[in-house]
Image (cartoon, rainbow, N blue to C red; front, top):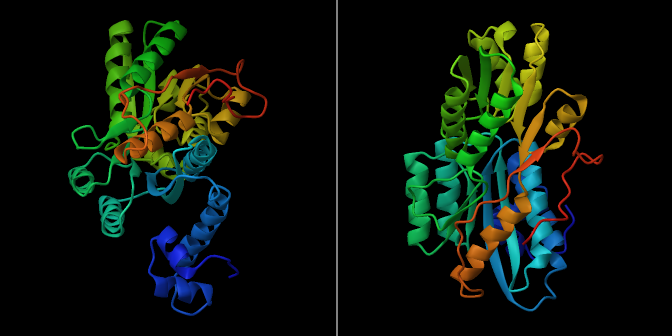
Length: 350
């Protein structure tokens, strides 16, 4: 494996030991594919960051730990890399840890490693469970600020939350569907990726309460636990007693939307309206094809910019400003969907 960086630098970037990195670089035995992939990713990150090294400023290592489908992880990484050149107070060195499914023990282990080796900040998308809250508190106590991304852990001592107002998003979805559906009675199917994602829980509660207040004759069915993955979501749909023929509309809070569309179509049902979150490649294609009606979207670059500025403020590099602001929520339809399949970022304000 060719490289031009010192082994110690690669080890620090990857979070692995020097000896482990040496075994990978020299293609020795008894190294797992996951470890080799971490070393390769670290070298790619170093190459991407190399152009910043001529900038004057402090060098800051930050960790981005995310449980999400790969399509969303790619969006987060792309947003982070787009923001880095706009920050002049420091040279940020992000270390990414992405997994589609992270059990509680996985998150705790990752955050424990970060606390041990040190970091200037952690941007975290994880489930709101006691062990994770404890680790967030432990990081903050160790002087490592944590910013929760997209889904919050509000009862922890995290420094800030970066994302949309999820309660407002749920109410917005309720308003859209209540005004779009003509009948007084019917059934709405809702979907969440995990019960423990606080953001999706907020969306669900506010959607349910607001929609039923506007349309009391409707029933709301719920599936959860598909992790935003097509196969898992389809298995959840098949395992639950859902009469597809009764579904009039869908509000999907956590992805796996192609599986939902295919499940309903397989049972001869095309919902009149389908609301999803985040304009990733899957949702853009479904929106363009007319399989979903609305996408509630926001600019991840704004979230990552805010998170990195929190870390800068904790180091005294920039003034500490109000970090309680939410990202703007955009309603995307087939009529304002850019032909490229991605939302224009030209109006994003960093």
